[in-house]
Image (cartoon, rainbow, N blue to C red):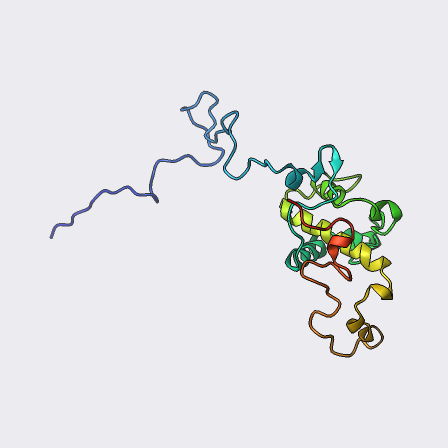
Length: 208
């Protein structure tokens, strides 16, 4: 009984180099090749300077590169909870868990200097770091850094708001939080960060 074997070559079995392997094919003996000088990878042109730098010209942006909706704020709250609360705590007061364990105390978001800082400033700090804070550009894509900046503005507004900023239909729940809060009460219109809407506080309106 004879057996017949065949030869084949497909994508699972093809000539290739392993990462960091050496090769005699190129003069520098590196199998991994650097990008061709002057080229830009697809999707990495970064032509929107506001989105990627947080600045308009040389100034920190007071506007956002996209509309701040409720979904954006929810995303910002989620990312803030993961990456920012260890130092800044959930209210932005600067008493996060690692601070309680002896790390350097960051400034509160509620001091006058930071209350008056535009969203582009917070984006820039997340992008490039500041003081002992290292940058989060590797962990957070630009859209998420903007969402966190918007959420910081929400926290700042929440700490300086008065009862007059709460919609009339939601005020009874301030004294009786055990009552069922009606859906949307106190949430304002779509894209609002709080009473009056995000666009009225800290420049969280839509950008281009």
